[in-house]
Each structure stands twice: as C-alpha cells, then as structure tokens.
Image (cartoon, rainbow, N blue to C red; front, side, top):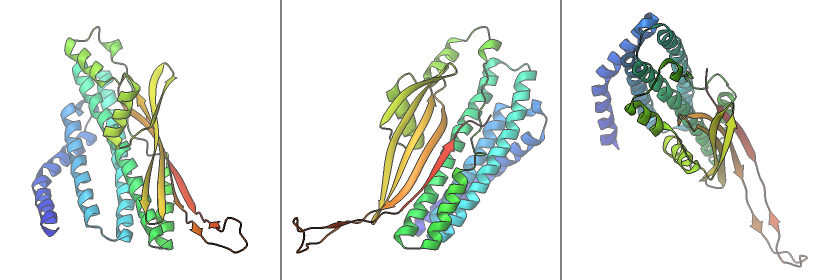
Amino acid sequence: MKQAIAGILIGLMFLMPIALAAEDSSKASVQGQASSVSVLDLRLKRVGEFFNDFAFKIKAALAFDNDAKLELLKERNIELKARQQSWVETKQEAMANIQSSNMTAKQKRGIIAVFQAEHEAIIEDRLELTEEIREVQLEARVENDAELEAEAEATAEAIEEDEYFLGVSIDIDLDSEVEGRSTTESRTVAKSRVESESEAKSVVRKRLGLEGANVKTVVEDSTTFYVVSGTETEVESDFTMTKEFEVWVDSETGMITSVDMDAHIESRGEAEAETENSASGSASASSSTKSSGKLKLGIFG
C-alpha cells in the first residue's frame, strides 16, 4: 500500500509543472479579451482541471476516516462550484469570440466540442460526489454513528437541492453560418449521433457507469431524446442503498443533458419465532428506516 501511495505521489510531482503551466494559461485566458479565447486555451484549461481531479483522488484515497472523508467531499463541492463559475465566464468570452470573429467553422466547432466535454465532465463529477457522500451516510448508519449519518445526509440533500450546479453547455446552430460541410465534418457529426435506444444505454453505461434497464424516446421542442432509467443497489451489513436514476441523452449530439437520481437507504430485519397460540407456528417482525434525496442536473445556459 505504501509503495502504491509513493508511486502516486511521484507521478503527482511530475505532473505538477504541466498543471501549473495549464493553470497559468487558463487564468490568462479568462483575464484576457474575448478574442484571446482559442481551442488551445480551453484545452489547457481542461488539463488544469484534470490535475485538480487527480489531486482530489489522491486525497480521497488517503482519507481512511469517514469524518475526514466527508470534510474532503465538502471541500470538493466548493471547488466544483468554482470550476463551473470559471467555465461559465470563459464561455461568455468564447461566445462573443464566435459571434464577432472571422473564425472558420472548424475552429468554432473545436471550441464548442471542448465546452461539451467539460459540460459532461461537470455532470459526472457532480454525480460521483453525491454518490460518495451517500456512501459515507450508509457506512455511518452501519457503524451506528448517528451524528455522522445526519451530517452526511444534510450535506447530500443541500447539494442535491442546489440548482446552481447544472453543468455548462453551448447550444448554437453553426449550420446557418456554413453553406456546406466537408466529408470529414459530416462523418464527425454522424459519429456523435445516438441513433437507437441500445446506443443510448451504452452511452450512459460508459460515461456514468450506470446500467439502464429501460429506455424511452421523448421529443421536446423538435429535439429527440433517449431517456434511460434504472435502479442500482449497494448493500452494507443489514442496510441497502437504492439509487433510481433517469438520464436524458440528446440523439443529435450524443450529449447527456440531464441526470435525475433518487437515492434512499433502507433497513429491514425479519425474525421468525414459534408461538404456542399460532396456527402456523411462526411470526414475522420487521422494521424499516428510510432517508432519501434527489439529485437533478441539467444544462446551464
């Protein structure tokens, strides 16, 4: 275990110069004028985010105590909020750049592609954060730590009810600015499309790690979505955490536009005892406790 941690820390040291350079570049991009926003700026900004995510995973791996882990997850929530705000500001500059510059269609699509990738990354990180907090809550209940359980539940509910955290996405029709697409562009667009319900299930499984059982097709405002839903359970001792989810996938772009998750923890015990006055000779007793919360994510305009 110590060797594994040492290896991670060594890797972290090698990545630090790259991350610092990416962070400096992204800060310069945000502080500069709209015309300075480029695909390279945005990609370097994402490299900086990758480093921050990597550092968080190391901290989480070293947090063996659930109290410390919950505090770390609270800090992670604050960091992710700041990350989204930074991307929203960058997005405003990028949109001004797209609308006022003489950029080619390929350059514009490059910028949009980066924002689409970051949009889904924010949703994935947010979903993972909430799930980890619910796992702390589940373990606290198993360990009969009522104080930690209540704190974890309150933290999860506050995050789930915070509608601010909705990702970042660009919705723009570039077709009106371009007379025609090249063969390469046409193939790229076709590749991103999701053309069947089975493909939509595959997208949700690969990107969010959720195994959908049901899929339906929904049309809203002339846009076709595949809505993937299902249930996952996690068992700890005599307790079960059940997660019911619904994920919306845009058929045209292949993007995950929203996630709706309802999670609850339940405890059940059954005992059988023979009684002299019972015809069946047995009796059953059960008890149940439940706590739940809903996480809903969508497009931040």
